Length: 254
Image (tube, rainbow, N blue to C red; front, side, top):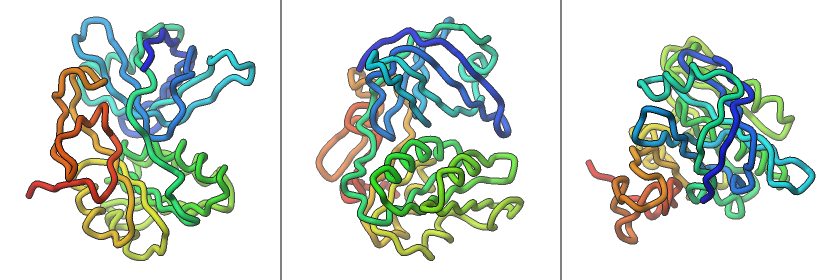
């Protein structure tokens, strides 16, 4: 973990209430797909934890570069973040969370994203493709206005298949991500999204995989234990021990 002062260099609205934000500065601790950053906003006591969508490190070895996040403006904090002008400097904790393990993916991994939980799939897809894997990405949304990352993922080349599912059928195929998951033949899966989706994916998948949980966090680095959850190997903190957990370690509460 590292506290850095990062500057807003780009911000744009890319879907219904969804913003793409680019921050520049010391991003040396942002190395693994599935990690998150924790942003401090003036006037708010708690920081805002947001998944990393992508990162670009400068080639000069300085540790500087840019980190990109996608977030949905759904409350006072994220609404304020969406209104901050370019050049604003923010106190950001970087290098948080364990991230996804690509070493266990096999030759044909499956990426599953739900809504804004699709954000970390871009960096993950790039990493897997750099390891010469064939990738299938299934992203699920309520409607066309919620769709994110479709074009960015498709632009990564011929070794990635991108399937868009919408509940109302207004974009891609009509249905849930699990409808597409049932039809895929992959070696391993990575999933991130709302808990009901993760639970459904857990039940539908026959292969092993990893799930990234969205949880309310106090500190973001394991001190307050406010985001603890029961697992097969004991109580774990989502912010410190996760947010990514192996499929076999998860205990669901009905």
